[in-house]
Image 1 (cartoon, rainbow, N blue to C red):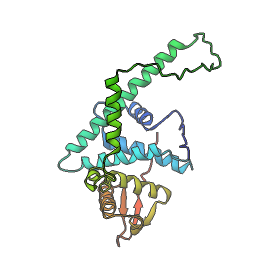
Image 2: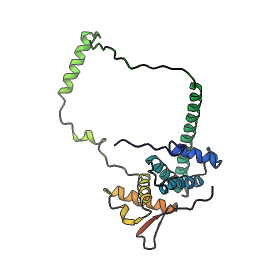
Image 3: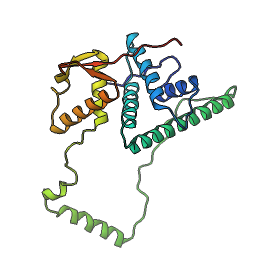
Length: 237
């Protein structure tokens, strides 16, 4: 199925929305206060949900990415958080530069005359015209014959670097949990593990749950049987 594209007000994607929030709240793009930015961004995604709008996957994935950066920033050793913030800052600066250049090019092209025509099909000459030495043709022939004499099927050792267990990332499971809670804000704790197909997926889901609890994004009830997405109240704009 073809992926749908959504245009949310003036925002063409998550980076566009982040730049808007940075400009609106006069934040420093080179030193983003991630705790303030993640609340503003998640709040906007929740507004989309409350307005019964279909949320493009890019916006949800960025929300999960920001929550993960916020979570690792709370850890005693936060080198990973610093690296993730630098990567995000680089993407934002690059995107901002591209937007400015696109605006300049659009301004320069404004008012220019242009013309177009229907494509014309050109005749194709498929005659092979290259010349080869006899020695070159002989080597090509011997290589082809040699490949045909190789033993089939190849030994199992040939596949050891290809076949491996799938690595399930914690960030991937954060996106999974967040998406389920966007549809229904409270779910059974066990509902997030029922469709797990491997031990790695179970462990990654559990770690993702811990990360979200540390970030106060979700809460567990007293019996630890239900998970609830925290919805913060919006202040006056």
